[in-house]
Image (cartoon, rainbow over all chains, first blue to last red; front, side, top):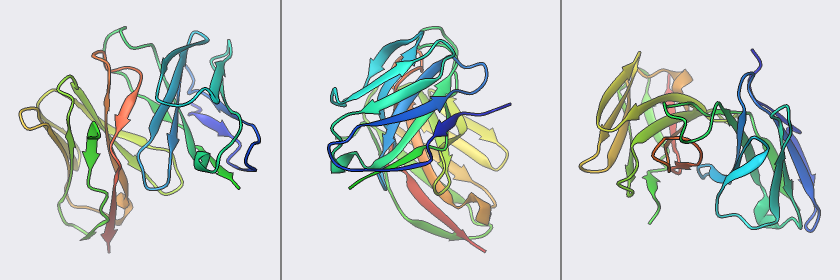
Amino acid sequence: DAGVTQSPTHLIKTRGQQVTLRCSPKSGHDTVSWYQQALGQGPQFIFQYYEEEERQRGNFPDRFSGHQFPNYSSELNVNALLLGDSALYLCASSLGLAGLGGPYEQYFGPGTRLTVT
Amino acid sequence: QKEVEQDPGPLSVPEGAIVSLNCTYSNSAFQYFMWYRQYSRKGPELLMYTYSSGNKEDGRFTAQVDKSSKYISLFIRDSQPSDSATYLCASPTRRNQGGKLIFGQGTELSVKP
């Protein structure tokens, strides 16, 4: 049973560039959430996708955008990169959306480490 | 004030010790609480979750919630070097525990042989 996969593993970009990160959810999961984890900090929620729509969004600027495909995989796009965007970007998958009842687990992928120089 | 606060440590203990990891939270609406373990350069792994107040035990791990003081704890018995990791507490912001998770900063634990 494949878990959450993310690509690429590492990425180095220059300020002002754009980057796309990819995530495939755990088999059977339909909801994808993205988090940013700065060094020494806990993950910060960016947004969540369900049924190809953004359902919740954290306190991140519009430079951060995403997409979910019919096969439930997802992309995170960041435009006009800043040095402060350097972090580990985590994708988490789960089954169902808030409100469907019952506790559910968010399974995290290994992350993509983005370095902006 | 952060919604979930956690002492970042680092915490160093000898093998076999009982470890106590703690978080405080400020939002009274939080009902579910999760503990994640994150090894270096890996994604967080869900250890266990608890609902409302009380204890939950899973092997060497016990999670405890005290809603009156807004305090959550994770106890590790007979700690092993393989328990060396960063431990993150988290809570979902919505009543039905889905969606956005609010994480603490994480506590780095080192168990020495």
